[in-house]
Image 1 (cartoon, rainbow, N blue to C red):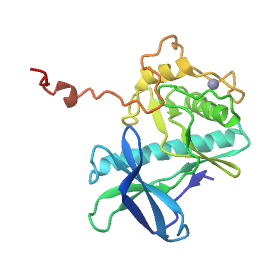
Image 2: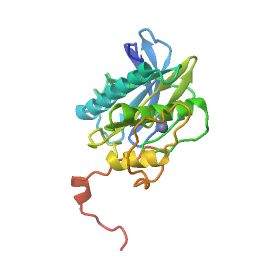
Image 3: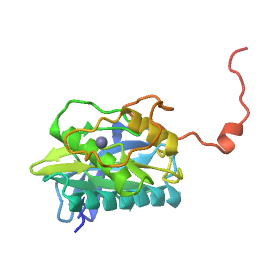
Length: 239
Ligand SMILES: [Zn+2]
């Protein structure tokens, strides 16, 4: 069984007059489902800030991270670390009728809060849900034999669990998209991670976490692009 929450609808109307929220990589618009089982419920539409509305590889990369995150969340459920359920919101690529532009659509999450970021920022409230999320991140690292770390955990509570959206995965090989800060990011995360009541003391951690290469930020830190961008000639704006 997959712990997912899906669109389950066939049409939406998006209000593109006002940005609902904005992250490091995406702008978010609010809308509502106008046809299908969720008709009348709220949804969000997410657009990449890079303006890549027609470039399918951005969407493919995003959906691959979601598939991988789902596998981790399902493994966490199977391991029985916590009793309550954690679901993952599943976005789909939808197309605007008028413009043909692509956008990611998923159900709205109420009572939105953030539990950690890819630099290891965490609210440290001591609250059970917060500790459960830190455990999910730590578990992902242990269960993948130190290859991956699920982070950027954010979402909202519902009656018997929690719904997450837009997580990030960092990897030893730095191959999981623009929020993957690689081994330096994983070390920074664990430099700040404090095991709470749901972490198993036997779970693996990186050997070197004495220093954090990345500063703690609540928002998502973007990986530096090593290629063309860094070779762009710069022109000073000061005379
Ligand atoms: Zn831990």
